[in-house]
Amino acid sequence: MELNEVTITKAIVDRYFEKLKSNLDIDVAIVGGGPSGLVAGYHLSKAGIKTALFERKLSIGGGMWGGGMMFNEIVVQDSAVRLLDEFGIRHTCYENNYHCADSVESVATIVSKAVQAGLTIFNCVSVEDVLMRPNQIMGLVINWSAVEMAGLHIDPLTIRSKYVIDATGHATEVVNVVHRKVPGDLMTPTGKIEGEKSMWADQAETLTIENTCEIYPGLYVAGMAANATFGGPRMGPIFGGMLLSGEKVAKELIERLG
Ligand code: 48F
Image: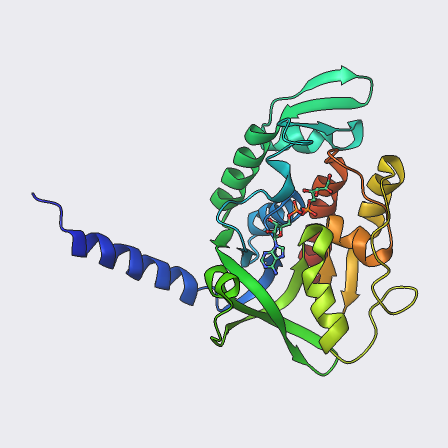
């Protein structure tokens, strides 16, 4: 039978809209497809919680694909190796407490396991705002990244969710919007964004996990965004903190959502 181009088109359009419509009202919306967001999405979905992840770029994986300075290896410390094992990512011990993994294998494996656990990923979608009610974040305001890049004046659409996770990395974009536009203080010492500090890997790795928490009712921060929000340092291409942060935020939300 000859392949029909219109049927191919209809299949894609129908399937995509099904996917979109079934994710308009969800439990958890994750912003950012880096390691922390992906690990959070994996655990939440595995627990049966309706979760979708929105990523601005075409590719998922955030800052993990490139390892350090495009040398595509990552380092993970002892405390997070069990997560590499849980995903089935191969690793080798370089020295005591320094384990290396191929960054491409790491991203590809986590994405695959997360999607198969039930996570829906929308790539090429940018989160430009939040849905708010008095003292509560209720979801996301989204638009095509292409609209954002072209600077087109086109109104966005909305996703409602019980919780939002800002996993946007250094830019901490959702928290920035909330800080700028939503009345009330953030749950930081000053009530504002403390701002990321320069490199200190050891401190940063511990703080990333500590700083993973609710920052405004309904809004959690994870990964590098957690440190940027709370004034923690950056850590460079060691990724244990990112993986553990994703796991922590998922555990907290699984508990809250019962
Ligand atoms: O930066 P990123 O990988 O976040 P992460 O999970 O991990 C940080 C590490 O990669 C690295 C590090 C650790 O060693 O410091 O940087 O904290 O991924 C963040 C993702 O969020 C997307 C962005 O394209 C990236 O893929 N993103 C950022 N803002 C938005 C967004 C937005 N407004 N809407 C959608 N996606």
